[in-house]
Length: 151
Image (cartoon, rainbow, N blue to C red; front, side, top):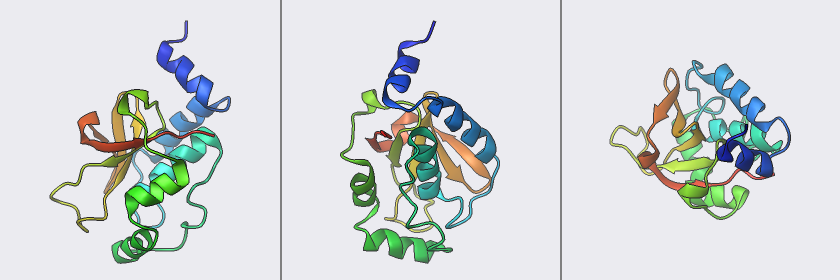
């Protein structure tokens, strides 16, 4: 019998979305961080693409290859919260988030570019975020804001 959570995902996503997201997590779990290829923004965009079929970063892919270049792109587009809101719609309540939804992570002291921010993706009750050696698990309380990955 499907759980309430599974039914909520199925109601908001095209058929097979959960399987595509799961395959992406398995593919990326040990892939190292690389600006413009496997960074936090592209991880979130890849998850949304797996869930919805929409590539929200098509214009960003291949457009930067360093932290400074990424910061310039994000700042040119209004900052990370504005960038995500413009592409995904208004933020949602955390209680409404389902697997594959995107969050803005609370800044940490070890950020290489303070103020740039980082994105994560809800996955089975935790946040997955791109880290140096692959995907890292972060607790839900590390999320400052959520956006729904809707088709």
